Length: 298
Figure (cartoon, rainbow, N blue to C red):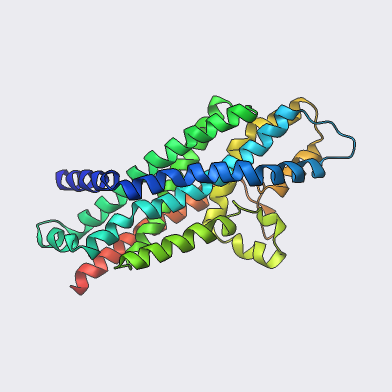
């Protein structure tokens, strides 16, 4: 355990020491917040207003809270994954600069070395994503705050679980990479594509039936739905308080992917947690087995 702790500390320090990787990881969620608020904010607002029954008046603060919750849920759902890939660059960099050879010839078990990369990436990504969460909450407070303490705690749990998912996924993928160009290419693909396939950039309810079915098999979709539900719980409670029609509330939830359906059956919140948690466990198991297989091959 002492060796594992030393390696985790070493990897975490190297991540924060590399200003390029650290600031790139930190500034990505902030840039997304500015871009989303500037460009997508009006799109979300207009689409929401158009979905309201004709002649219905809607408080401006509640509208701001609805748009703000949708924006920050999209940002956090994407950032927890993309930042994990940035944080995990250290694993590939050690292969490129030869540091991995120095570590493997020392009396360190391959499993210990592999776990040190995982936990270091988890810690680094959590620090960045929790910082982004605080900034996002400040933004929501400025446009329309309806969240409770329980909503915030559930949102933090969602962020933690998504970071675990992103770290496990990036660890499995980075295991096969051996050059800086490869990790840059993978990082670019993940950054540009993940937001679409997880329903962050565009609700999957707006996709065709076939694509919706395919996306419903992807665990990241349920992670986005969890964040979105807990970021907007307060908004929906306020809608109920002002006697907003229940059918209209459910229609809004369907339209922004708070409600997800698997072959026509509504997926519960507990099922979403089970899917995401189970995927994390499977990815970590795959990562461990890959490292054990590599040891046997040697």
